[in-house]
Length: 203
Image (tube, rainbow, N blue to C red; front, side, top):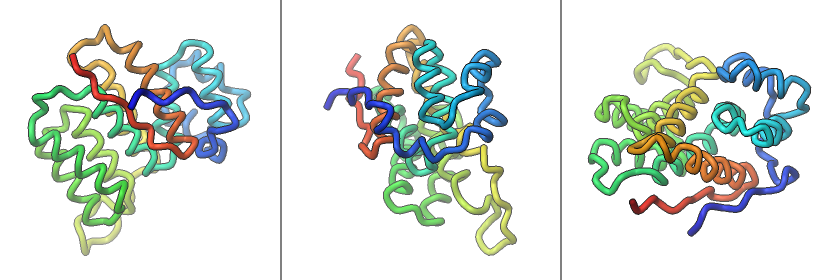
């Protein structure tokens, strides 16, 4: 399956309900990007503005915070799969598969399994950060049975952005621009209700 085509703005349903204030405050967008989206009505319009201006890195950060958490984690997983090497270490593969399993069945046990797998992967790869994003998408960072310690609402978005960014430069940073174009098209597909799947690079 090839990268999904760019969806029209009207198809970005999962972005239209996303408030922009948290993105502006916690998304770590560049000053120029913040100025550009200052008058945008919603995240879908902000995405259009950033992509039209060629600000792909800031568009990634916007999407990481604006997509619903499960969709955002899934997007990070799809980006990790798109650039993952054939010799991906088993620990990284386990973290990715645990994150994908949480998206399909978002239980607390699965969320904690994803974080444990990320720890085994030493938090150094896109796959590991999909596991971190999964963990920070839940209700509490405390051990089971302990008083709840909710993660700050923006932490999952930071982890998603980290996973996607790491996937975009893996192996060959010169591929980043082309990869980000594919990744953004994938996010658009997900925002419209699609699977956002991409072919894994073969070389």
